[in-house]
Image (tube, rainbow, N blue to C red; front, top):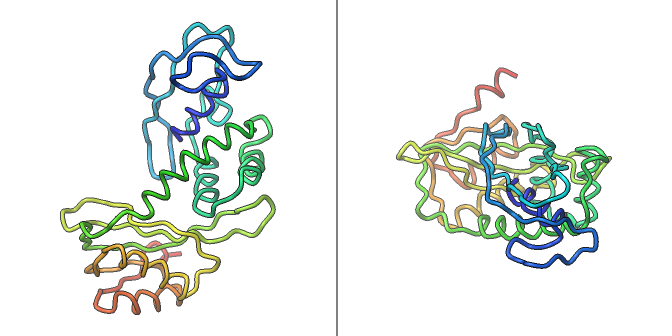
Length: 233
């Protein structure tokens, strides 16, 4: 979210954060002038973003992703997850943005490219980080489905999060899965263990046969419980 805002400001001013002269012919006069905190609602709860402030501009800046008064980011979150976990091209991301947020929210290829690069670099580092220091009492596993291309069938993104022995919630892993199969889940969990994640005390999941089989294969000594929300559904 922060990277998207920064990229929009760069496009608006026609120059990078510490660049003095503009490179775009239609660049705006003015400069960055610090930040102000802004709270937006996400699917994971409210988060605080640092909205850039500008001075000396002749036109007011309005984010095309968030809008002046936008406080919900569900569509953008779906785009980010689908795009950067799956590794879509700039053209795919641009089309998905227009499909998810409307033509009025479309942004330029250069801005899309900047967002892609910033988030992909951060995601790749996060996805390869060692997990040897993560000791879990509880591990939660589930998949959410996202459309990777406009008009295409939704595909699963596998997710793992947990509660450490110190009682701290932690997001453990995220990866694409063509289908919710035993092989897909086993590969995902194997990657976590190869990076140092140990067997948790309890694994909580839905009743999908492929997921249960993968849990029993990778974490054979862990207790297993079906998610109460999925059970009620």
